[in-house]
Length: 469
Picture (spheres, rainbow, N blue to C red):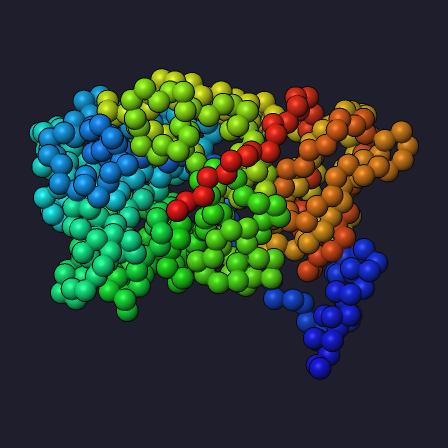
């Protein structure tokens, strides 16, 4: 066995047995471990923390909504008539919630086109809305830039009811078997993304729902288009060689992820809570509709709007667990976020700002012990820890202690930190707080160690997590 491998095993065993950091045990002359690192765009995406989805499609205008989407690909385009559509109002909802970015569903599984396009005759161009001249994508992107919300676009290439395509992007409703028709569909998808990625300026985020069928299996050749038109857009479930990097799905639509959650995965496209030994940086995004189980608006469904307590619980179990959170705004037939939904988004945003808008004290530092001295003793019940993720996730185990009545007392302990870890514990009066890193891959780089007094009973863990079929 070579020396580097031997020392790696020795260091790991010593760290586990002695409860001290790997960095402190590194032998002179050993090579530092190869730590996966994000792209600058992935760092910016993780800093954004919260986003807002906007689902809006022609099924909103018919009874039954999107539940019967395979039969919604040939509806009369004139049904689409959002006579009060106002994308500025959508941004008001995003701002109220505290979202830094958003994603508009420009083309969902029905195939209805929400921008000016001649891909095929099924979209706003064939509707009576705005005399066939309307372009929701343009309105949306302009409103994003007006209100300082980073724009993202969702366009499914794996399903299109108008063209009889179903998952995983095969013609004949998923059965395939027609090479010429499959090739034609692939070229349509390439032209579609060329329009969406090329006609509306730079995008922060591109959402692939379910990824994309690769070219060697009859899918569209998307990477060259992405590299040419949107080289700085992070992609959800994007191709393995997306230039700005990808994000991943945690495996449910309940807005939560497991603990511990890592930003790295073993294989591109993996979901779930990540892999601490993975070599690919692909952080998680937890998604959920505000109205339980409904991504698209349905009449008389206000009773499905999630409570503030449930939304705060999602925040703790997504942003507080090293992931992003994206909540859906159900756009109604008028083309607006309904009033009840707007109210709840604001209530949620206000509660997060109340809890974490200003810390009692905070610091930054490096090394296996980072200490924070308060101006005066105070009652605290939350700690936020953040790593400098541009240099990778280095911490593997840690403990946070507080100086209470002249003695160090354990407040909390855990594993993954990454972009952000929110820890909560019983209210404790302390004069100092210190973070002790017990195991790490290299010298810990602490971007933030902050303490808070929330003073409210934290929401319970969510139950009944809904998994995507």
